Length: 91
Image 1 (tube, rainbow, N blue to C red):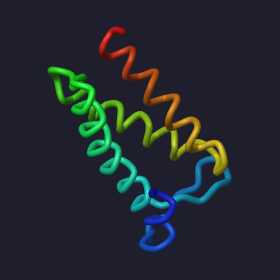
Image 2 (image 1 turned 90 degrees about the vertical axis):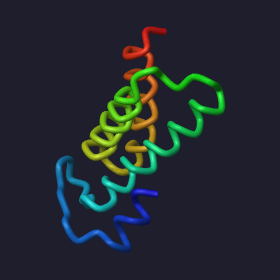
Image 3 (image 1 turned 135 degrees about the vertical axis):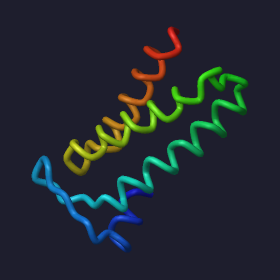
């Protein structure tokens, strides 16, 4: 989703690892992650009592997606989201 939004609407570009990404794409990823995490965790009755956990997971995954080169960014975003969620909820 971030790539599609970034390619179509991305005006503010950044380049950290030799791969150009956009702030608009990263923002869309962050927002979609918050919604998706809320839906998935709600379905499994696993929404944490503190909603900041969802925001923190989305933020960490977005940062990892932003600093990882294309091709590995989806993988790093998923793994970082799982790891930070498990660390924050104590599983």
